Length: 79
Image (cartoon, rainbow, N blue to C red; front, top):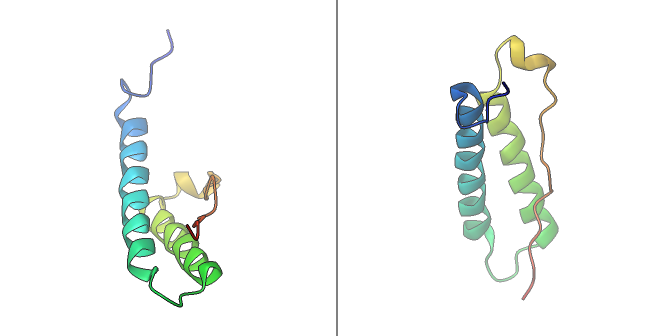
């Protein structure tokens, strides 16, 4: 029988870590969105932050083979 991700602590921990990283990236984006800020620069900073945090969380020998990255790049609406 196949386990759901909630029944597997390792998978649940990865989803939790991804949520923490996403929340921190959102806070970073909010802090960088000031009058006159370049949207492309802010998005690039957030993407770089996410990639660096992923390397910190998933850096053991087993996870080196795993492909990690951003599912959707950071997008900011001017409105």
